[in-house]
Amino acid sequence: MKDMNLEELKAEFEKALQDDCLGDDCSIDQANEDESAGVPLFVDLLNDKLLAPAISGVYLSRVDIKRVAEAIDESIPIKERAKMMKSLFRHTAKKEYLQKAFAEFNKHINARVLIYEQLGEEFASSKYIFDENIAKAKKIQRMFDQIVEDFEEIEATDEPMLI
Image (cartoon, rainbow, N blue to C red; front, side, top):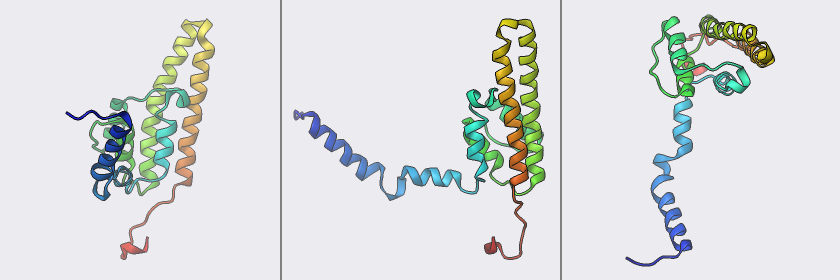
């Protein structure tokens, strides 16, 4: 085996990455674009805000997202939470669909809020922490209303290229 110094090893590794992994047919950016194809822009906002407990005040598990999907007659596989959200909203074309989905998310969030209220009563010295999480959850629920209000429905046309 030939002795290599660190710089030669780095150069060889970078060359291998350029030749094998970052070519046209396996580009990381291209894979991310394919995954995001057909997904409305608000889904990224939901992933950033709803799925982060520090921002939303609640934790929604993969099972919670799966239950939301089942409640609105959708079938999505259990994967990473962000991918599940993209699958759930991939073909969103109507406000009614959004309203149903967000109503189900609100049910899950309200269940967490109820737990926080009960814990705040039982542990009065920690109530301020639960109150902060409740305020964050209410803010996320208002965001749902804003997304529905701003959503533009996609109407079916005779000419699909006109969209």
